[in-house]
Length: 349
Image 1 (cartoon, helix red, strand yellow):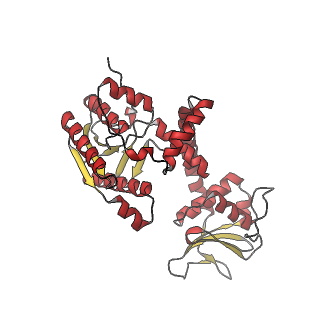
Image 2 (cartoon, helix red, strand yellow):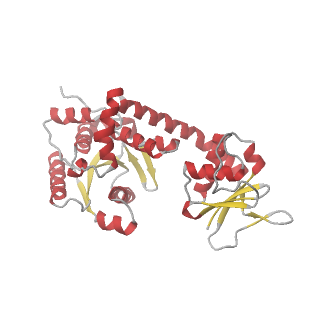
Image 3 (cartoon, one colour):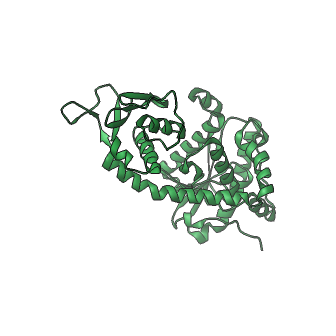
């Protein structure tokens, strides 16, 4: 008897209209087949979607033809869209990877908003999760970054689900070989110009020499990080509501709303920040920046703490950051931190 893929069927609700994003590669081909085998018992409707990125010419045309034939064989409807990702990437100042991801998400949003699907399923696997966590570590991510690929991505339009995160590449290949099913290979997966490809072909094999189960280890780390974030989020939201001071202090007491066009600000009393432990301070500052539409890196957060005189003990001084009242630090994205005698204020113009 042919084995089944280890799918997280808890992500599927009876009555769901699930649209599987299918590139033609092994992972998405296996996910579509696996769901087609189980859709009746799960009580879900099934369809597929394919995005032609306009990147690989005739090879991409062949992917579309392959996916159409697969859906015809499974008697499933297929939604196909075309995008000019290279042009879009150049216009937006994005990498091809970023532009392709955004184009896919836009397609998912259209499918969900139109009612074609109540959930879009993507074929991210445990190997994808491990590579993502490792890349985040290399780049110095915060805890939420180490959460990697979430099983469910909540979009304004609906849910994007990842039922295949518990499956490895070995699971996928064995599943397809048992069913004598071919798949398409993307030639760009061999290019060492992409960070993920270098992580996959160079770093992961090296790490497996130290721990053969390193992918599962990174996947477990991601789950722990997501759980930690879920625990912190309501607490930080509560503290932000209690401690945030909107507007700018004025002489004689009270606060004034910003007068500069587009300016927004959030302030904190220094003494109240000082009463918090360091992890809470960091998270509160980052939450305030996000409320203002900006994101703080770890280095920028440290600069703000230095400005406020609230950095960890033993932190070396930064000559670019004044640590006295009536000083300021300019950050990326138009964000600025200002310190007075009693307050630390973040503002964006």
